[in-house]
Length: 250
Image: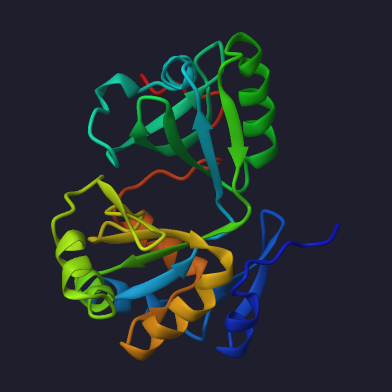
């Protein structure tokens, strides 16, 4: 099997990353010291390449109804554009197929962020349900890349790269809220227990942004530290802490 690469693969190699197979992707596990990377996120700011995650856009009249059927949480609560919700996607028996973030764009458009390791079964399940929701158009977005900038100084350092007006918009974001600035979808979300942002942008633009972040001393962080950070914060990992035998009611 040929392993996939994100647009930042060469940047990781050039930075001395140890590359491993992660759910069929060649991803950085660390850049020399997982412990130092862990502390960098807790004390300052670090950036993760999470472009292996699956971004899916849903359009159409039945999008809300489809998500209400698929997910454990109440998508109807999302009324403000950019508002996000964490939820589990369930089997008909209530087992957890995946955990995910869904963003409300408008009444006929939602953006869903799915795990890389569950990509195939997620898409089979969603596409199967689309038979009952013919007005919904599902679009996977492999053209997009995704970065997670996390840590107590994450927003400050990222905002130093922006215009004053754009920085003010980022500062106004509350937790689990997103906005779009100059083609970059920016959500105040994360998976580390720290404050921070997750950015979704065209893959063609991500190398330039990555380099700019390095210039303002945002440290590159591998998936090893991402795991210890989420574990320390008490955040569940699909496939380890939950699976299709797990109910969200437990």
